Length: 146
Image (cartoon, rainbow, N blue to C red; front, side, top):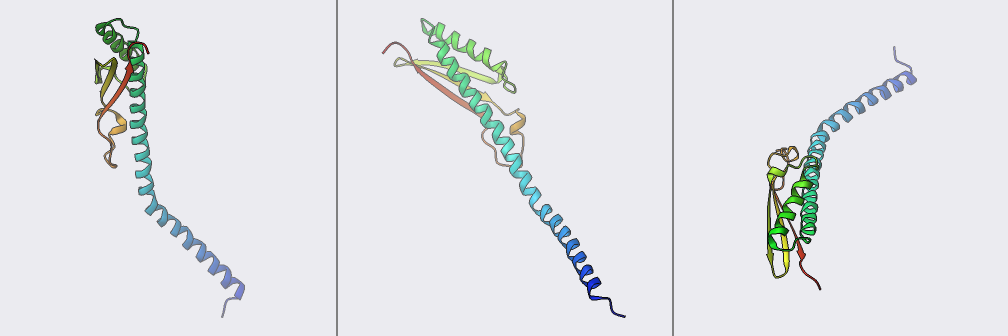
């Protein structure tokens, strides 16, 4: 006894739909690890760039605040105070991990921040190549008048 044509066609369509569902699962299993690696890379580099940009802004503000000093000692004190005040409220940045150096040469004040980011959670992913664990940012500003 043969099945009616309509029943055979419906049976065939049902089998094809099940096969497509299985193919979607296999495709997802192939694509998901790559997608997760890309996502982890975006998170890790986003955290690094956020920290680097924040440290650059802190160095810029320290150089600006040091302009009010009358002599090199006072300018150095003002710059260090500015760095300590600004690193405190920034989430994820710790003032004790930042090394500050201030130098003056040729009517230019240079503030350099060297931050140890080796303990930051964003840089702990070992699955993607990451930038250096030390973030170094420099800001220079001209001293004096015109």
